[in-house]
Length: 96
Image (tube, rainbow, N blue to C red; front, side, top):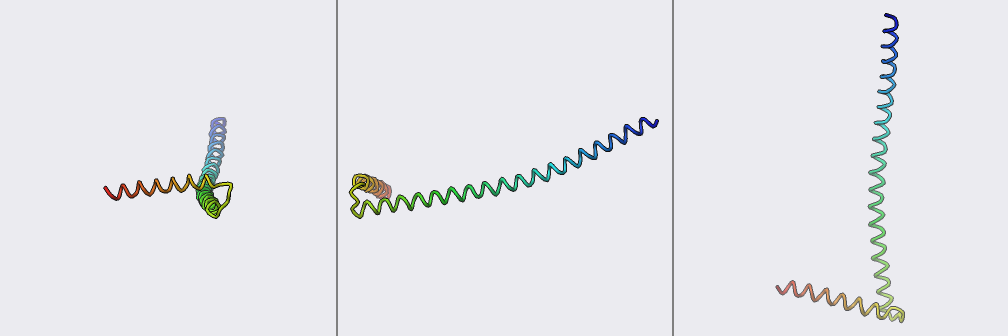
């Protein structure tokens, strides 16, 4: 009978340890999920910031070509033509 009591006690201890480990893992999982959400949010903000800076860079690049920079005149002409085509498309849609 004492063997049975020892086995039961051993099982109780093991179950207790497993439950404790489960609780710790659940806490760690929650912490990691929060960290992941924070990192994803930061990543989205960084993407928006990069996009904003790329737009600023392209605007500055275009401004330099408009001011007479010899190196990018053909690029400026192509960009102006693309803008004119976009405006023509918009006018055509408005006319419909």
